Length: 351
Length: 265
Image (cartoon, rainbow over all chains, first blue to last red; front, side):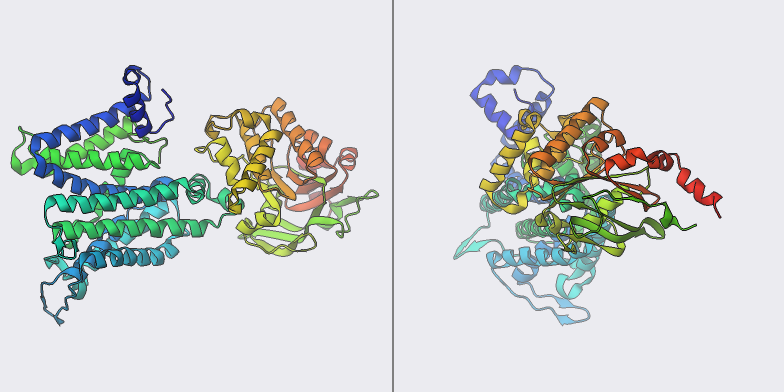
């Protein structure tokens, strides 16, 4: 079997000829990882019943949207951003502020106005707000790359968290925003888990579509060239600054979309959902899945959601330790994976 | 003693460095990196269809000459002229004006395939048919690249990567090709191949070539004009023969020029 094929092509190859799965080669580790994670997901969902499986898929949809949009920046363009949680928060807060109808008395400024927009009107605005902020931030970030980029995006994550926490006129600070609207078309309100899963998956499909189009276009080719050697890309006639800015803004807009979905799904958000740790987890998912592969990001998100949610049900684990144990297991897993497969589950190269 | 007097102007007939016949020319160019002067009042150039070589020891400012043309080095004095008018374009615009740069150390995109690498040489055209036509002609010129066109560039040897870098530079269909140390770190037999290929490009495609090289023997065989730089200054310009006849190169490489200037008050 061709070792250079991406994971999904190998899976379809096996469906055509099952004997291929038995040929043992180095590249097959990747294939087994693919199958194992998908099988685990299926078994887990069957065991825990339909409702849980549906919720899990919704969560997976949100994380997959995030990791795919981040992979455009980290994997394809080579800009290691740990600030994407800021755009996620911007999207979430935009949708929450625009759709929530719960009135709230601010200690200093009095009544905070409510807008009561429908979800599908607020969602594009969420993407636009994230994109606009990304444009401004990106102009400042464009001169940096590599380790400096990590630091400046780290700065952005901290700033955005503090804005969510302290700009109480809009975000209501630590109280958070209640009653974020559920998606609605006409009189059809998407308020069951199944309907929310559908919205999540449709949005995920849009994100995959946009990303796939970018990656396979000549624009995507230039992004890869920038990742490899920015100066040479410039010499060959590509205004690197514009390309970096464009992919940064597109990625932020899709992240904002995921944020909007998240806030509508939970119906309540507060700044704690947008802390730096979440951003690091997001980068871990991208690295775990593999850089510069959309399939890898999907697989990484699936593995992460499985671990996060699956750990709840380990029989020997007392309930009160579940939260901490999840972090430990995830941490150990990342270390082990980086030792044995630094290129991630289905990736081709290291960071 | 004035540094200028080291310049041995042996301008033979047909190669007078008057400047009017030069298609790409540096006039009195200085480059400073902070307080360090990499080039000081250097004037050199190349005529249309010609192959000019810039030689000199490490740190002489050879690569800086090409970087100054490409806008990758801060030009603090003088000007670069392209086809008779000043070249003021931004780095990413220069290739569209017909100057293509093959950087030192090959710098191919290692995680892309050979044909993807080549296509990046003229992706800015947004013209699939033209792109394919150029890809075909470059692959014809480099049979080794045709055989490996689907392989990752990282799987190629140094010599093959250099050919790929040359081919990528040619994809822009340049009028002038700038080569920065094309034989650096290559085995002698490969060096010969590279020089033959560069010569072939110059002869067949009539491409003007400006090559920076420390491999004097190989490059003097194919060049029609030669410059010698030392410590950021031009110390010799003329035909390749004039370089071989004088012992300017041994002087420069053994550091005798600097020593002389210290002895003479």
